[in-house]
Image (cartoon, rainbow, N blue to C red; front, side):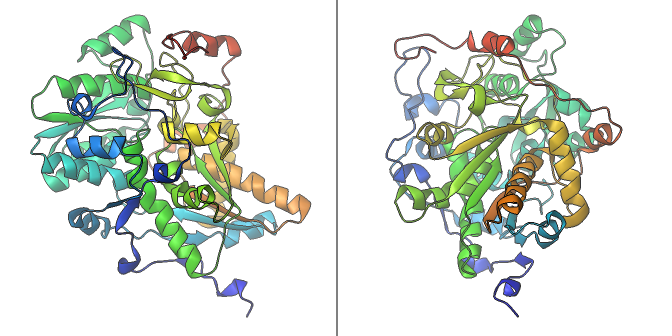
Length: 462
């Protein structure tokens, strides 16, 4: 039997091989991500200023760009063991279907009730809220994976959980909403008339289907209006990428175990949590000059922050109540089309990933949703997993890379993140199967409207 055939379909790690620390890729970055700014003073945000919105320990993690590793508390590791380590899967059947010489692997994060990678950070953020003695937390959710994960974590720790769910997903995915309620969460479609900022957005954009930026604004207002509550975020922030590094750490351990080195690493990109988590330890090697990899971020053509956005300071939310972050952005006022990848409908991008992209250490592509769903169904039919629409963006790019190998004869090794399952996305799959799904790509004029709202101050010109 050849060496290749000795690699199993699924590579599982033992419990003792799970990471005991999160990896902070910023520690190895020569060019650090630009600091968050107080929108009033335009000075770097301090822990004291942040702690009115976020948990104190999470603030420390957010602002620390020099510590390479943060120990994972034992209670979080205990929770992780319910669904981690997650498998690294060799996509033999997909390779055969494509007739490609490429070797394709995916890190599958959907084997928990939340159905996605989001639980990795949800339990960490809920843990620090509980440790601080808080009553509960508020948050936003796009497609619903983050809200589901946070509701599970809060139920486990006995915290109240209030979720503002992007309206188009709230309406498209009632079962996802009911899973959150089953775990005790209060779920509100956003934008709503329950907050000042929600009412303002509804007045400015009547009939809007919402966005992650809208939902963030409402969740922040709700947290600051209630004593004993703090806001937690499912993506974008560096603390979230830190927690999600367990994905990449496990993937690298599994690949090292069998002497596998990926040439290309691919992830879908909305705010950046799963992509950042997957690539972090590999990117660390690249930054330290120990190895080289290609990294590809895949975003929807309807919300192309990396490929068509501007790298400037912008508000993280539509209501402009959050700090300013330097990132690739379409403008906080940009309301994306109601595509079916709700978790990718964010106007900006992680400051960490934005810096890496600006430094030429990472590539980005945008893809249209009909092509994404075609790739999702092709994958489902041969690999037996129905992928989430968000994850299917990475599948589409992985298939494209594999087909290119077929043309050139190159035997590349491809790794992508399969961030979650699509069993709550059947309305979207139904529209695709019925031929009712369309593609939408914003015009330059439409993007200009969102970019017009970017704050102007010295050094922040578009």
